[in-house]
Length: 364
Image 1 (spheres, rainbow, N blue to C red):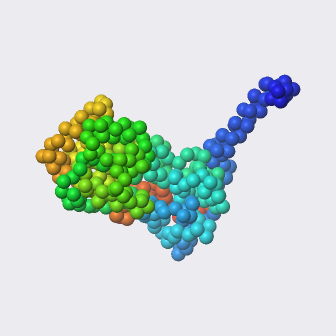
Image 2: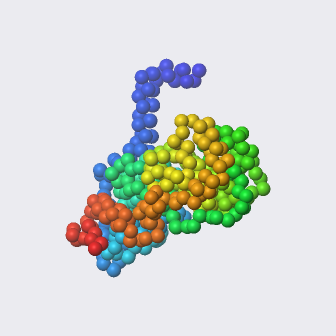
Image 3: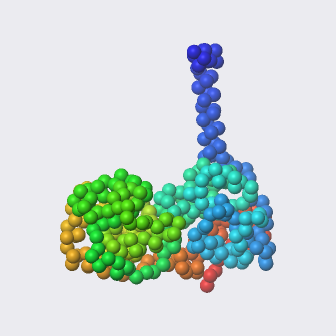
């Protein structure tokens, strides 16, 4: 009754307009505001003088940034001493895509250009942009969609060469499924395989069948799964979605343990870097049932299992250049990204004291 009397007295048309205005304000606050502010505000301060520190801030402060990102920043601002400091006003901010919105809303104290990074298939949501402007550069783990995006898939962030695990249980079991995000594709394929081979074991939070095997916490690091996969012939390495360019550490975890990865994700990208004779690509089959049939057939062929386990993990037996960025701070791909970042940075600020000729970098 109250609502009806309110509508009758105020008028349906006026209420509709009011609701539209409220929605527009809400959308503007969450999505449009950074772009609006970009047109009417600037980063008005001096580039640090020679000998002064170039201050980098991290949002939130508790985050750990990927080493390759920090190396890119050091290369980009090679003419200054790059220092991570949360107490002094920063010249550049780094914002984590996965940080909670509540934490990010507290990080509006400084007005400085910022970059973001994401290890997921998606980039930072616009509602999590800083209020002053969108980021000048975004480090992404999937195929770039915007000019300001630079591609470094999550699988390379902390990659180090390794020798595949050859020991473990000599009589390896069939298959290990270690996932905490119960994506339908993963769950359905595991259910099919479990139905056809009782030795398929769920060791994570999803479809758990084995309470005896203790899986190390994610905080310990994904390399801690080596000893687990070393006791199985196959390991499910299925991404949470099929997204162009998106490859995580999952396939590498299985390879490290000496098992054969059962992969699902972006088939084109994974085959660009990895040897397709060393893993099983679920995406190459018309149905999950067809993929399961093939996996079961391989599992019954000891010669084929050994062949696949002894294959080089990388395409053409060579480590791709992209996989070297985490351990070579002067890698050409990092230098290329540094040039891009430096250019974007000086386009974003005004009244900087850096001579125009030094806005580009000559690493030679």
